[in-house]
Structure formats: structure tokens, C-alpha cells
Amino acid sequence: MRRFGRWTKILVGLAVVLIVVAAGVAFVVVPNVPVTYSDPNDRYKYGSFGTEAESLPLAVWQALPDVCPDQLPGGYASLGAIYEGQNVRPIGISQRRVGGVERMGVNCAFCHVGGVQEAPGGPLQVVLGMPNQRLDFVRYVQFILSCVADPRFTGENVVAAMRKHGPVSATEAILYRTGVVPMVKRLTAAKAPQFAWLEGRPAAGPGRLDTPNSLKRMLNVAITPDSIGTVDFPSVWNQAPRAGRFVHWDANSPSLSERDHITAAIAGATTESLDDAELKWLESWLDKLPPPKYPFRIDEERATRGAVVYEQQCALCHVQRSLDVTAIGLVATDRQRLDALSTDLVTRMNAFGGGAGTAAHYRKTGGYSNVLLDGIWARAPYLHNGSVPTMADLLEPPARRPSVFYAGSTVYDQERMGFVWSGSGPGAGVFRFETRLPGNGNGGHDYGTSLTDAEKRDLLEYLKKM
Image (cartoon, rainbow, N blue to C red; front, side, top):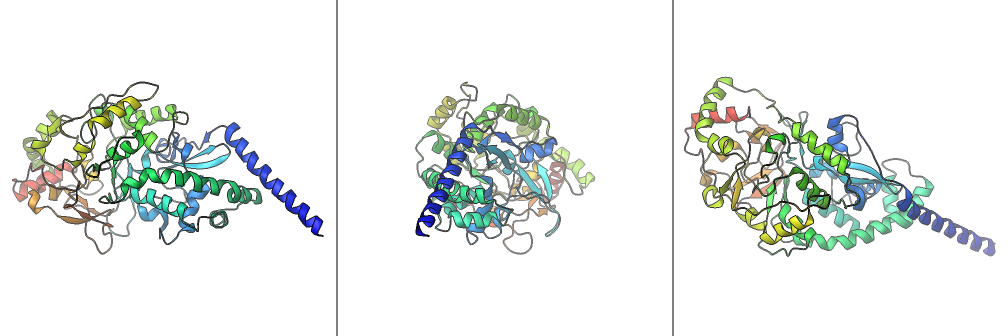
């Protein structure tokens, strides 16, 4: 009996080795196969352009909130991920079979699809191309790093959590226990130091990200303690009128394809994994994606009067000089984002290239862009750093703007043109935004602040039609 038991252990061990070896061979020989979509809206929301190469296996990603439930009560939805119907993946999470294993990836829609509610508890209207004002991307990354480093992240616990989402075969269980989970733990631990710079800084909160310092981390540029480049997620609709013009908050890039190339690299794509054909489709589709129509009632009489106010007060910068740069000394908004995009970083970004082995065309400017105002109703909170909760507040002198508010609500304040920013009650914001913190300043842009209350109301009504 002892001899039989010994041989049984040897055979089981050999079987495990063969399974792991077979999985390793599959990683090399099985071609990449993305989940595809015929509907262009679904293609934008869930399609893959190659960021899965260095991402988690989908089953492990789905299991993490069950492995570490105390770290993320409510799952990914609690961080602002938007789930539709019976879909097991939220908007912005793609799926691609890489080497025989289904992996998840992050696409543009994760940050650039938002939602609007008319009232607390009401249905969420999903808006394509809109900033996801509830998504806390930094906390999302930190949760994954923390959970994978947690002692509970073991093969047994991951497989048990996987079974909550669907059947797991005996072969899959062995593969994940002995191969996949240890590999994920090892690779994630190796990547964790790359995100150490996030510690000790003002939290970005929902709807925002420090893109310059993310690029510095990727391109090996030193991140100094005073470098804070946190900005609001921008809208990405209606790109055709922006073609060939310098865009981003500080007008640093003239090319959507160059921006997509470097953003995909931040999200995990490699030169080999990047799906250029899908990126080209995405860029063409965004060129024609219209800005969303305001979904609530508009007072047309007020809007007619507001059009006159707009022409007098706003059109010079946002129409005649749209996408030009207003010097920081004139606009006087928080300059941290402008300074974070250093000359050294721009040089590295241009050397990184714009795809297909070509140099990129980023530049350093001395101010912020006069952005187009298409769909401006859906782009609250306002200013480049999201430091002013509503358009009504932006039309107040800086000293009268809220110094503290709560960001992350999806309930729309139709009177003030923005999202509800209280910190309690149904539909309240979820993140305490303090404008005194570095990078969060809400000063500057005092245009329109001297208008009468009636003129401001008229202007707001017109801006809802943009």
C-alpha cells in the first residue's frame, strides 16, 4: 500500500507538471483571439486593442473582490465601474485569449464612458465618450496591488472565488493553483514598486488621474515630490474638429493616434500586442461620435438670451480662439499640471514615438487650452483639475467657489449644471475634494463672474445646448 501511495503521488505530480508545461506551450503557440463586437457602440465599450498582454487573467480579476472582500466592499462597481444588464465585465474591460488563457484589459471606455441620473435611485443613462466621473482609477490599481500581495491570495482561495462566477474544471483548478496564481503574484510584486510614487500625494479621487507622472514612471523620468499633474478625465467625442490641432488640457499634442499609442502603453499594451487596426477604427469612430444632447428640459426663452451672453463673454476664447493656448498668467488657474509636463518628459515622449517607429510631436506650452465646449453639460466638474463642481460655481468669483465638495455623484443638478456635490444623502458624492491641496486649486478663470444673476442663468441654459 505504501508503494502504491508513493507511485500515485509521483503520477499526480507528473500530471501537474505536464499540465503546467502544456499551459506554457500554449502561451507561445496559441494565437491571440479577442472577443469582437459587430455593434460599434459595444465595440467601443468592450472591444480590445491589445492591452491584455501584461494584464491579469480574467478569472483572477473577477475573483479578487471575493478574495479580499474587506478591501473592496461592493466590488468594482464601488469604484465607479459601470455594469450593463447581465454583462459580467463592466464597460471598459476587454477580453482576449492570450496563449490559451482568457485575459482582461482596459480600453478607452473604462475612463471615457460616464453615467447620468435624473434623481437618486433612478435609471443610469450611459453616455459614450463622457468622462466617468465616478471611476477612481488610482484606487482601482491600488486594490489590485494590495489584494494580490495579501496572504489570502492563494491558489485555493482564488479557485474557490472563481467557482462563484462559473464552473471550474479539475484541469483549470490545477493550472490556476500551481501555475497561474503564483505567476500573477510574482509578476505583480515585480510591478508594485512602479506605483510607489502614488503614496503620500493628494488622492486623485474619482474622475481624475495624474497622467504626466504616470508617463514619467513609464519613461524613466524622475518624479519629484512637487510634481503633481492631476487632471479631470476629458471627453473624447467629436474628435474631427480637433484634427491637426494641439489638444489636451495644456495643448501638448496634435495627434489622436499619438495620444492613443502612448495611452495604450500606459494601460499595458506592448509593441507586439498593440492592435493597430483596432486603434485606427477607434480613432475614426471617435471622429464622428457626436456630443451628447442634454437629457433634461431646456428653457428655450432663457437659452435664446443666453446665446447673446455667450457671444459677448465666451466666444472669443472658445470659438474664435478655440484650442489656442491662454498663458497661465492670464487664465490664472492651478499651474501644477502645466509644470508637471516637464521639458524632459516631452523629449522622452517624442522619443517613445507615435507608433510604427515614428517620432511623436508633443510640445511644452506656457498655459492651458481654450477647449471646445461641445457637450459641456456632461463634463462637470470643471477646470482642468475638476476643482469646481458646477458651471454655476465657475461663474462665481474664485473666493465664493466651494473650497470643499464631494465628487463622484451621477445625479445631475439641472439648476446649477453639474453633479450633486453634497457629502450625505441619496445620490451624494463619494470623495471629499479639498481645493487647498496641491494641484487642486480652484482659482482663476474669472471670466463671466461679473455677470448679473439673470445673465448667468441665461448663459447656463444656453450652454446646456452646446
